[in-house]
Image (cartoon, rainbow, N blue to C red):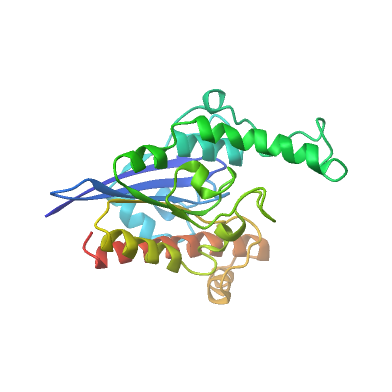
Length: 261
């Protein structure tokens, strides 16, 4: 027999984060962390939005603790993600902005100096008790996908992942990891299979670039919201992106259920 525990928290700016833990009676819980990007806390049907449909997250919310007054004290992408990765406030994990200040060095004309400043920012994660690191000490396998600013996934303590990170080309906030969701979730499935085969508990960090711009939803979802009378194409695309994110979460949830985890 298994036990299920869910914790849902709405985060301004960062979007909605959701921890799902599934524990077998004879072992530690498996953990799946779902995080939307640039989605208002109101923009889920379980939060009362009259048009956006999020049926998969609605079902989780129905059996979860939902913190409707939750907020992030640092309303910016990178500091919020570091808080979620470490459990620390910004003044503790020392990340308060997305990129080094251009007042310290020009990114285009002083590339080497700017790169040193970027590395200095990333190095904070090396000294923090990141959740993936702590779980690794308990025998967990962990997988990073989606948004991640702190260099390669290994620096955050993940055993598996997609982001190559700075100083690799394009390694600012996700590079290859940003393909997740928009190009399917097979890497997450493959990781879960690996953990099951190795008989290890697992931690999944699923933080796709959704519904963040560019708003490129499937045509059928865009047309669905246009048919609801949404006059603005921009708004219809955003609403469609929110439902697309929900669909990808549903795929992961269903995969875990099908595995009987």
